[in-house]
Image (cartoon, rainbow over all chains, first blue to last red):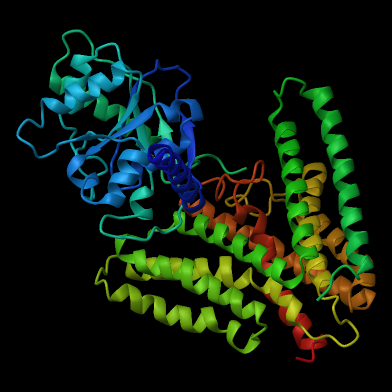
Length: 224
Length: 317
């Protein structure tokens, strides 16, 4: 009984957070490629704010949303009961140890297993929130190892614009600004592709999305 | 204030409804004839605009029926949406986070509360004096001086356009005009109807007769013929609407002329900002129209001028 109540509350909280995110950012999801990706897949995105995974989660179609789990640092989401409720219960995050000794072995296995069970994943391969002036930090090798472990899974680049301004690191209240979440064409690990080559390709795909039309949806088009 | 006892409001909603029915039927016929598979962008855009117009009129109608509180709340929400679009395109940085929070969650609600409470003495200076002085103070405490003037000016102007000017639409309800008690809502109907008809007729006249571009660097679709035709017909429409206003026919026409003129230049100024920022529309939330500012730009420029002209010559408060 308590489990049912907790589940129901978790679903409600997730929907409520999604609604608030829409209210603040009027977020819009844009597909930049007609090519369909196979599910389950891995959405990998730039990371500038705590709200990143919420925005991606919000714009996914409902069926896919129910099957998609954000991958997040256990140290952060285990830190309090409230965070555990939001992270684990509401958004069903896949928690991984970031600073543990086996940090580069266990997480890959856990992610691969989640994919095997039919869940799609949201990952932030920069590893930490980007607070620099650079648009994108170098990608960590995690997604390469995951691609190696599951070479037939699609990796979908996702660029989140503006959210770093909505909720910068260290701030608590969000400022309302329009946000756009762009989904690009998926990529897979090529046979024999090196780690450096794959990471560079993945990074380029992400930056290409960022180049398309900053800062809102329609930058650079002709005036009517 | 009860709005149910205002027959003129009913007539206007009915008239606007009829105009939209005619527009919808025309749009449907055009689609059937020229764009059955949705291939003609101009017709698809026209139909999207007409659908959005229905929604906007329905929203306004509901707010009008809800009286002063309804109108104030509606415009507060419109200001919020407009300011969000404006702030999205500015250069504000991390150091402006608190300034923006204050603009959205303190200045905006306070301004609309003061308008609701009909405190003219304070709402007419709250943003241009208090917000303009205190927001830079809030920003300077964070110590980031890069582009300081630009960032501050952008936030101030966003507040001016999206909140201060827009709040002068519901502020029309607080004017005390002898013999016009309880019917102030018709001033809002007059203002919005004249501005929007001027916009639409400028577009129509421009399409039909347009030869000479008025500001080619800003907007290729704005022509001298469209401007003259739109403003002239809006003036005429305003004069013919004098029955719902406290003005004589001549006065109503002159006010409509001022409204249409301000609306036109408001659109031009906001186009210049879009050009500068390299965007086509302010946002994407209103299908066919772009963003909230794209629809509100001319209303926002006309509202404070109309408010003060009426206040100066007709109001006793």
